[in-house]
Length: 192
Picture 1 (cartoon, one colour):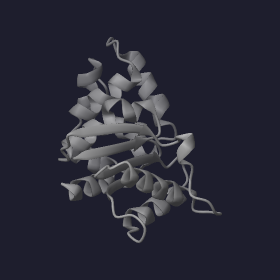
Picture 2 (cartoon, rainbow, N blue to C red):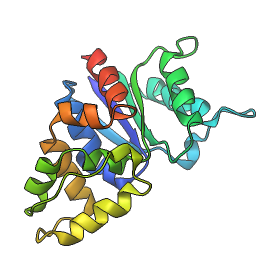
Picture 3 (tube, rainbow, N blue to C red):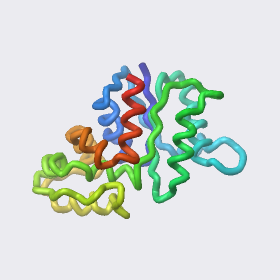
């Protein structure tokens, strides 16, 4: 089975998204990461519903390229319309039948890294206190950067995120990121 992983940045595509998908039970012969903002895969034409159209464009491309599954995660970035449009694309079966798990990280993918202080402490090699509700942080990327600076570990942000994705308690992550990660996790598990 071939799985296309689409995310917005190197932190997702550098191993973290793949780690989440595998830990949620999806197995494949091939996982291929692609950036969501590829210039040659702009949204389908017409006004409005930009993220719905972008998701459809990725479905079209994934089917044409012979992928069996599409996993796509974008950031909400304070725009609740993205949740609605991605949910609509998840359920859309008129044009494309590719199996898919589409998700929206509230506010950003970085918030998922803040859910489990035990995993954070393990990866960073220092005592990290419990973070306030991850999905309510205004700038979770900055919080992750501050925590990374506290650490003696020489990890890039991409390496840190991949390590956290491999160590986080998924039950805690689903509870603490109930608007973004939990629906995404359910969609991935439905593919298994």
